[in-house]
Length: 102
Image 1 (cartoon, one colour):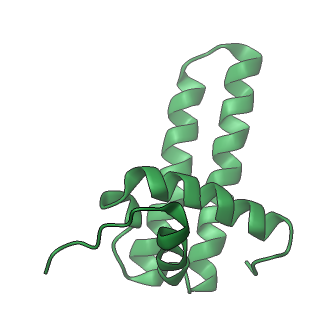
Image 2 (cartoon, helix red, strand yellow; image 1 turned 135 degrees about the vertical axis):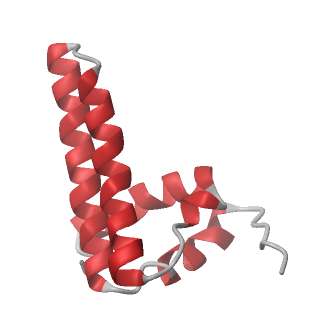
């Protein structure tokens, strides 16, 4: 079966949300993204590049834990890396502002 090709982010985002229906998956994403933000902030403060690695591992680690353990699906990042990266930040903002439950 051929992979679906999305031509716009607006087409992709509903698919992305459907891949994150399990509340614990969304929570794992939220925690991972929050940890990534903290790692980036720590890097800016210290200029120690190891914090960028911490940010990368915690951000993707949280997402992958959510997918592999709770959602039981393949992260959309593997098929749509740029749309997925953007969608993760949109979903994070929607959870932070209460527009999406977490």
